[in-house]
Image 1: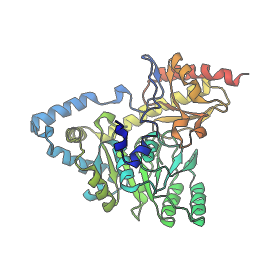
Image 2: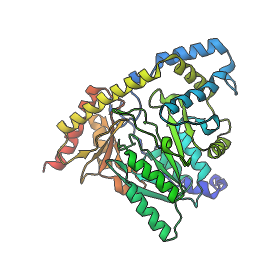
Image 3: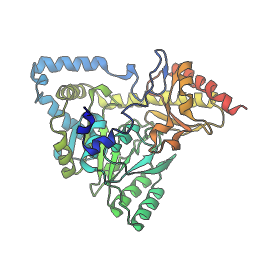
Image 4: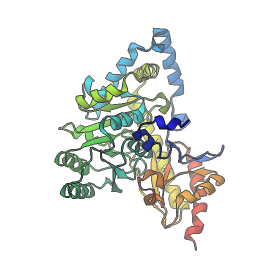
Length: 398
């Protein structure tokens, strides 16, 4: 019996793609994890979360364990609205949808807006899991290059104008990570953000703004695209994974009421009411601005340590972007295919993510790798970069 024959055509097509997370290698036990794009263990507020769970159960007993959950979960919506307002994003209750992390938010948007005929535009490179999700709905993906200042909106304009002139379909939406980009760490200047929104009006497409790292600025705070969105073309995706804890799965979409309503239709009751109620109490009981400032300092110190180690240990032919916030440093290794060296790196006790996985056309990314400074401590960061220097040196020293 061929059970796959029961799959509809669109599912059969989607299943031909690599499975989610197929790029992730098994890491040796003592490996220095410069590949891990999540918070360091000591930066996750496990004790405060434990206290929040205790307070929740003592206060409401069985309620948080039911389908409808705790009344505390409802207050999370207002708390996130308040945080967004501090960043210039003012949304009503009907313009905000709490999701199970940013990934569910992105998938809901894709499910709501894409079909096999739809075109989606992405940055090149971009977040690999977003690419995986979009490919489940359409294979019509336009890749727009970035530079050290993020999305090249002039190149985007050229592509859009050419498609319009040749009567080709324009993108349903453009997916962007404008602040502290994953994987490159770049940040789009205000003028490019304005230009992007002007193009969205001129060529009639939506903008999906992934702002997962937006609060982790090392210098001045950046203005989200959603904060300068008079026509409501931006769907702003946010998350508490990078500033609290990824396992809590708290994310959101902020945007036009009709678009949010459609996303909510397909989300149904796929909530985590216990996590949402716990997070609401946690946010009530801490000074969140103090936590954000502390995280910024911690990550900036780790980033500076990584940048100094790159200067010290990597061959001079290797280059990288200097991030203004977030988690990542994007490294170019001219003439060297980083995916072919990963096994050797793991054997030496250090990991990274080969750049090819961040491109819709993987051949475009063979000479790149992504390093994360968020997970490892400063001593391990230096040791890890030293090992990478030893790995790459033979390719540049004759």
